[in-house]
Image (cartoon, one colour):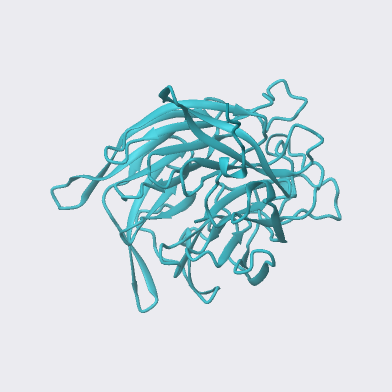
Length: 417
């Protein structure tokens, strides 16, 4: 009988780079008890080149101030993969005061642009002060515009900061009016439509998804409402459009310790009497508890959330569950219908981000910290999406033993395809 030979090709994770950021200022339980805990290194941006065998993957890091205290949207990469932009929701931990509490962390404002053109030798290309308490950063589809959502201190100020991006530099800040915005509302994120000049905003205060057409005239950027807003589930955290642009998928955390959800919203399902599009929810599926991270496969057929579960509880608390999980859902890209496949628990703490590889067969998961004291850092862990040859309808997510160490506190992550 012939003997099979295993090689790294059995795990062929496809892509150019994985880019992540780590907040070294706090342990996961600081959210609940206010104790920042031990310091492990400095805030960092990590880059993993994917053009090597998986057993040879490693992270190259460069200091970059960031914070886990916002949604997992603290880093974005230009569409050409040449630059990463990192925001800090809160500033760094004062090292002169070892007893600093979570509530003592200052408001952040630094924006760092990092040159990725040589991923083995990362360089800071630009560093500026932006709006205080930024929450998310994203690029337009052509890379010419960077949008940062933040909490304005001035009640009359826009919650969006938009920068022109040319030659790897942020310039020409614009604060466009957001129709219908009410002072005090928190905008957790912005996401660009894959085809149309349109942007969707996540209003976490009102649990609402709002759509706008975006126009630019003589460097003046303006937003125009595009159809109705859609009320979604409590505490929406991230959103992503299907590749065909017909649907947008949103995860919701829910307050407390109940299971969260993923909602599929159809765009232009109907047309109103005035000719404007009517958007509406078409499907919903349950996720695990506190599903903070969200990703969609490149073909638009699979959706995965990373679920914190009770992993952020202090280790001495009876509420600490000593596990996190992923939730897998199938998405019909033509109908927008979601179907829950399963929850897949694993030994991890505060996993806020997940990305599919180019093939849609593998996943990378950002693991903030480990229960195992022999593993003192964070990691990017690799998973496999697979099925049973004799029962193809039985689809599974399987955590592999492949993992790349990064600075503890990894929380936001993107893939350069």
